[in-house]
Image (cartoon, rainbow, N blue to C red; front, side):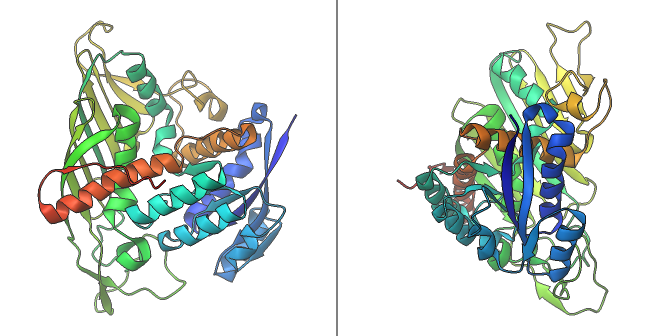
Length: 391
């Protein structure tokens, strides 16, 4: 029997639109799931975005006031893609209203905010979801299974990174992402959060870290309010403002299981475009994956291969979820297909009233590692990872 799940979305920028397309596509690509998302209400401070949601995306109504979404009796799930600084207030209001909650990462503007958010949602019994969408790439899911099946033997090394180009242009506008009071930390929350989550997902809990940071682009042109996109540029001679959060974070890490590794994130680097990547090594094999080549996996299983060295495994319909999107082997999926899979699995959890992973508990685990990194910036030494969970 098909189950209707009613969606209220707050924040209709690029990510809110990606979420909305994903909800609309669940019955198209995964009809066997018997889930029919209904786009009930959307909130955004820009009237043009609200009009777009109503006209092109099929939302039934729109508003400029986010509380109207949370207070709507005909909404089951609150989906939050608003700026980071708003997340805590939005989640706590949604939890108090008894809604299930999906929130884009970072769930909190900083580690303490994430701890408060996780507690509020946990006490409300909400089914929570967090947008660590790179977990859902079929080749990442396959790597996870190989690890769980012991195909790599005992894990020994892990290297994770997210090198993104969005801040490399020195004339890139001073959007909210570059401001501590609007976004919280910079590369730590925007990029490193993904890197940490993937490390925890594949290799397990992290015991301690030593970390460093830097701001490479210290000033940026001021934007015109309500104009300009994520990659918009200003001009030479435009008024500028100071960047107040970090461009780069790097860390040495020790996992609780003895694995050693490194994590890096940078938003201003030249060269990589969107290299969210990992390499994992074990006593019997290794694997590597990069979002820039999301449909490929570098795999090394010497006891199972006819020749020594890495082989290139192409994604296809033999791997999780991919066959519903495109048939055959070697046929590609893209970034928004990961969001589609994420939305499908989250709504399945909502429908079945069971926990979803990654949820706010996973976001709290990431925040606990981030907290240790921030402490290490000050102490310039190794810091233990301590859970920030509040009872």
